[in-house]
Length: 324
Image (cartoon, rainbow, N blue to C red):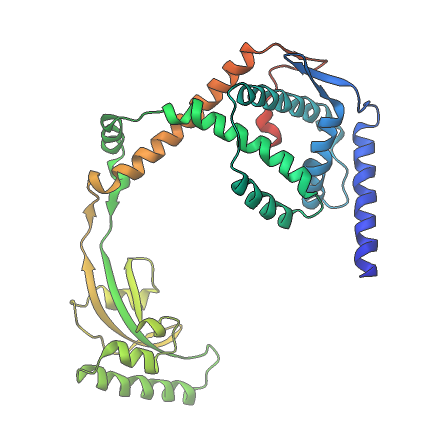
């Protein structure tokens, strides 16, 4: 426990040292931007750096200092991000949006487990803002996005090559494992065992029960069932045999790098073009996501343009995505 406390103290000192070197000339009370007369302070920027930017950087680059040449750009991007957040939170407030308290509680609990160094009160503050912005964007943008059946059909027609399913087979197998360094005696014993099981299978005993009783593969509890799979999913000797079988047919003994197998073909699907109706909803959701990305950014920029925004000594058009 003492070692853990010392380690934590060292980490905290390193983090505070990094933050000091990062923003030693910045006054935390300095106003860095205003949005409709509401101020954003340097301390708001420093908080993001302390809680998220530096811990992530130091986890990925242990023992290194944040690059000097990136500090100014990071400051600019964080201010721009906070401006956009403020614009959206003000809009959410105007519309009287609220968050679901139970959902908030669950998200706070999950976040606090992942980052216990951040207090639950702080997580509640951060996640309340995030949920309000999500609710606002859902109500004002995403809920209004419409993708017509014609658009979905057009996308399907243009990407038909993506909706081809290869030939697939379903098989069950029984495996008697042979280690890579097995002796000839061990191999012979394993082969004798699989040949005895093969006789039982060919006589008509239930294949699934034989697999459960004798197989040494991970699928034994499922009666040896491997489900459907295309060419290329199995090792070559196994694939060549299974794709040559007729449905219901049981193979002879097949040797692979894993050992000796008996394979039973239980199903076949011919290669086909997936019908439009099978993928219609999936395609529609994908197109909605594409439209959402574009329309959300455009709407956010519109909200920002409508607000009275002043950024002190920073590029108003910086990219907030650069710090995500």
